[in-house]
Length: 220
Image (cartoon, rainbow, N blue to C red; front, top):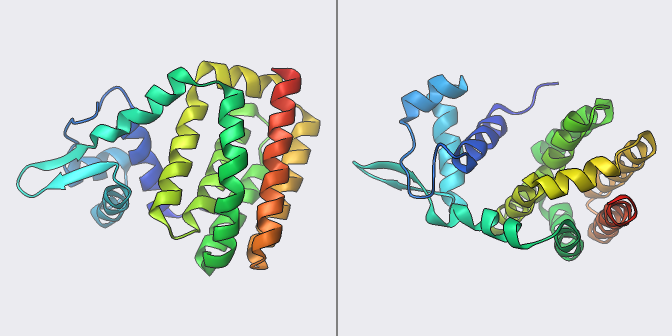
């Protein structure tokens, strides 16, 4: 089942503004150029840019263009000064709160999108694909809060997972048993969200983050 085009455009633009090609403060290509580059229509590009502007990750000036926000460098600064265990400690405090809020505010399209992401996660056996859909699922939970602050915090946490140290820790704990455990935990999270059970959603997310924390500690 296809992933929502707007979400794919947002993700692609997010990766673009994190790349070395576009430093904080630099100007992005025009909507027409982005449309051709990402192979989506201009209406989708405009919607994605509006979302990124709302999240404070880009700024737009009439007659001048669209620029990467200066604050976009912040996650890299934090990543350089933190460890995977510190990241997990932060996630343990933050993500259950996000899950509780998502249970109360998620719309039907949000839940449908997370189900699609979960289906892709279920089929992923290779590490890179598994990690990709894991990130997308958690991003979907944050977006379901309908709160741009939660979405931005979640995006920062995701960015911190792009370091070599994190990759080493995560690969070290990757196994068939780990895959099945995380799939089961994602199912519990989505079930709680679908039932609008904020308490269960928070507990399911906490259990999931603790599982990751324990495996990183054991295998890292």
